[in-house]
Each structure stands twice: as structure tokens, then as C-alpha cells.
Image 1 (spheres, rainbow, N blue to C red):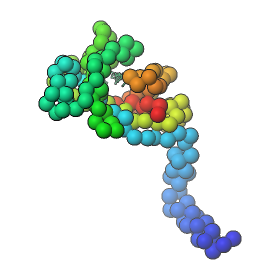
Image 2 (cartoon, rainbow, N blue to C red; image 1 turned 120 degrees about the vertical axis):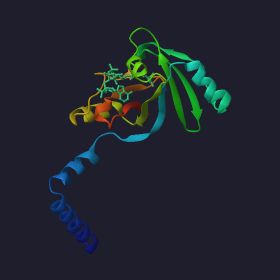
Image 3 (cartoon, helix red, strand yellow; image 1 turned 90 degrees about the vertical axis):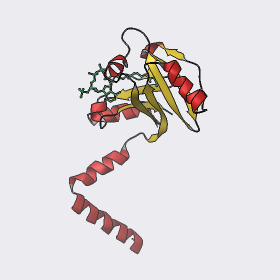
Image 4 (cartoon, rainbow, N blue to C red; image 1 turned 45 degrees about the vertical axis):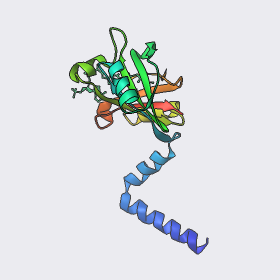
Length: 167
Ligand SMILES: C[C@@H](C(=O)O)C(=O)SCCNC(=O)CCNC(=O)[C@H](O)C(C)(C)COP(=O)(O)OP(=O)(O)OC[C@H]1O[C@@H](n2cnc3c(N)ncnc32)[C@H](O)[C@@H]1OP(=O)(O)O
């Protein structure tokens, strides 16, 4: 064994001793079979999506999409393009929209969720479930970009609703 290898092995023993059980937890974390990527979008719930679209298009000068119904999610979406990321404007679609309670509590609207890309959503779901993070659906759904998405409970994510989207 070279001197370098002996030094690395020695350092590992030292870390193992000082971190105890956390050392194994950290190793497990890095051994997960999926990787987190970049922020895909930040979503805002809006009581008046036309007014919100006009703010980003006419006042702030951004490129703003048409309004699209997302039947399976109970919302209309508008995307505001901001370089390599986006803002997603949301407003309720139908009687049982998942954003209705949020808008009832936040009359002027507000930041609703962040969407983070992952390289393997099925593995991410299995792993997070095992780590007791509540998934808000048993299976992934097809999201606004035609890719599988799943939501994580805000109470398990520091008070922020998190959407994971397959890259
Ligand atoms: C098109 C698609 C895409 O991008 O691809 C989408 O965006 S779909 C976007 C819309 N779809 C979704 O949001 C799907 C996932 N969302 C859900 O399953 C639900 O909305 C929940 C997040 C579970 C909230 O459910 P619900 O409104 O029935 O419950 P609730 O009002 O009693 O909320 C339970 C607790 O969570 C908090 N809470 C609720 N919504 C929150 C949010 N957006 N951010 C942070 N905290 C939130 C409440 O204040 C409350 O805390 P306290 O108990 O302390 O008062």
C-alpha cells in the first residue's frame, strides 16, 4: 500500500471514530441512486393570472406564455421565461383545485412551490419515502412540461412545498 493510500485509510478511520453512526448515515445518503439537479421553476399562486401575466410581460418585459389548462393538476399555468429558469404562475381550475386553500389563506397570492429537477424520479421517490418524507401522491403525474413530477409535503421540507421533476 502506498503512503498516500495509508494516509487516506488513516483519515477515514479518524472520521469514522469521530462521526460514529453519522458516518454511515452520510455514506448511505451519498449512495442514493438518484441525483438532485437545478431549480426548474418557482411557482406563484395568483388570484388574477391575467393581471400577474401583464406584470411580467408589460411592466417587467419578460417573455410570457399563453395560459394553459392542466386538467390533471386542477390549475391553469402561465410560464414566464427567465434565462435558464422560469416562474410558473398558477390559478385554480375547477371546484377542487389544490391551490384553492392556499389562495383562501393568501388573498393576494404568493409563492406556492419550488420545482427541482432530479435525474431519476422513481428512485428519488423510493428513497425519500424510506426517509419518511411524505409524497403527496402515490405515483408521479405528468407535469406542465410533459415530464413526471411529484410533490413533497411542505411540513417535511422546512415549510416549502417542493415539486420534483424528472430531468
Ligand atoms: C402543473 C404542475 C406543474 O408544475 O407541473 C403544478 O404546478 S400543479 C400545482 C398544484 N398542485 C399541488 O400543489 C399538488 C400538491 N399539493 C397538495 O397536495 C396540497 O395543496 C397540500 C400542499 C398538501 C396542501 O393541502 P391543503 O390545502 O388541503 O391543506 P391545508 O391548507 O390544510 O395545508 C396543510 C398545511 O400545509 C401548509 N401549506 C399548504 N400549502 C402550502 C404551500 N404551498 N406552501 C407551504 N405550506 C403550505 C398549510 O399552511 C397548512 O399548514 P398549517 O397546518 O400550519 O396551517
